[in-house]
Image (cartoon, rainbow, N blue to C red; front, side, top):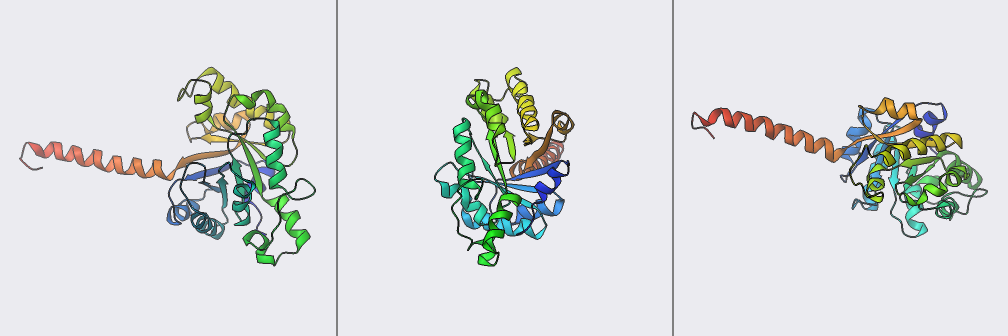
Length: 264
């Protein structure tokens, strides 16, 4: 089983940089992997990527020794483990609402002795039965990461209890839904949001978890100083939109200059 680049760097005290994929197919994933990102973030909570897309993006990521993290949809236990069985390196579970919710996720995503994840072994993560049974269970627990997303005010009362749980790797602060949850959508400097961002990092570090969130090159140092070591920066749709708008803004300036000459 391939070792996780993300976990290796985090366990060595390094910072991990991730890139979000909203577009399907493997081309964008390959461009991002070629650029040197440690991790690609595929999304099945909000994006209509089917399992074939996840499979292709995972193959691309592995070709460049890049990890693939899949944000899962909240449904049955199958939604949690299918990305792992396709050999994604990690999953991000959205909207953890309390400590019991977190316990259930660990139960279904970790093998014995940590949890009771359903076992197959005949898929990509088990080497299509070519990895010995005991080694498969051990490696999956060691080399596949589970991130729990804190993006609502409801779990804050349980935050320390969630952080203290054994069997998962990251606490991921999501500012978007959190801002909506506190009645201040899009107010990124709202005092409750900035305090919670700091608190998630502090609690994660206190209990030996890795702190994760979204950020940018502009605030990366601030996040690192807070204790964040996994930072997702940018997304394919943002980059493509910016590129297209830039072209049209420039060409519209050219058109304006040519209006006086009657050239449109």
